[in-house]
Amino acid sequence: MLAFVGQFFTNFKTTGAILPSGGMLAKAMTRPVRRAHGPRRILEVGPGTGSFTKHLLEILNPGDEFHIVEINNAFARHLEKRYLKSFRLDNPDITVILHCQPIEEAGIEGVFDFIICGLPFNNFPASLMRQIFRKMISLLTEGGKLTYFEYAGLRIFKAPIVGIKGREKLRRQRAIVKVLHRRHCGQRDFVLANVPPAYALHLTG
Image (tube, rainbow, N blue to C red):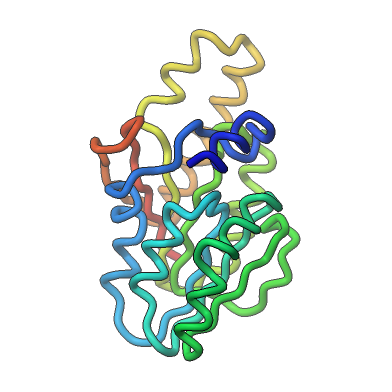
């Protein structure tokens, strides 16, 4: 947690929350993966200190392939030291690859059955948000699941205090989300037991 709080104050735009996500949200985010059988190709984008990563590692099976994309060097080092190095040694029949770069630039080939995204989209310009979603959806296999999250009511709470430019940014973000959920059969799970409460949002490729 100390690693997360430190990066919140130094890299707020890419961290986005002062506390890591809780266990109940992690379970909701990883539910589509846990329900699937057979070899799976999984991508996690923006794992931070690994709130979702550790749940994903627990449900990987021999033959699975797990790619992780993290732009923050400190978080990437933390993930490697805390989770990934020992996991690879204990599970040589599971492929785990960490990419320390933006998802827009990551040299990842092929498509994925599941994409789990922990990026703080409310901190991003609408143009970057659109670019990242376009990239992730291009990496999603037909019928695959892309899951991301939003804090419940955050845009409503922010609207009165962010000014005209801020409200325009929120309007554009809402428009992007509406289009995505209409085109990709969007569903959501409400997670009350998180600080703050959040939605796990699922899109279908």
